[in-house]
Length: 109
Length: 114
Image (cartoon, rainbow over all chains, first blue to last red; front, top):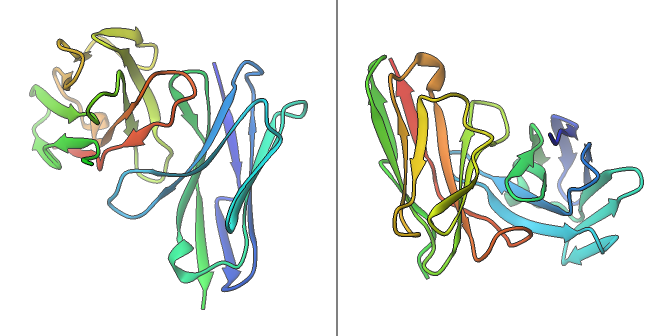
């Protein structure tokens, strides 16, 4: 089955700086790669996703890159703000999502 | 419009008891998923429904876990003879179709087995 590794487990950045979270996956048949943000006591919320026919996607301050040959994808958040503080999960899928273990992003004021 | 809803939000039960967790997906979504999230971990896939049928139940940990979606909308996750290790947040998600369609998650049900 699919296995998704996510790094780092905790990331602390100064407000206004950029944050990068990286994931690798094992199943070359996976073709959909979403990123979710989860706040305490809430369900995961989709922030951006990428499909296997695209190498990069951007939505305002958030971007995702995908390298299918190397089987890794990354989340980039620029100009970080206090409200970006949360746990972020990457996932890979054909049907049911396989999630990474999460990155606790801390934005220091 | 309304998102995915789950009831109850919290459930405390004793070891050995039977529990049912309910999920109301977004109206019109044909695909429904159940996940389990332990503390400090990512959600773990349990089962995927396309319409009324379970298209993939490979994530169910054992035969104490069962899920139904009899009319292709509301789903119920059933756990028999609960164990302390079943304690977790159970998340439901729905998507318009299957495959690469965005999955929208509910707030989850926190299950505690004493």
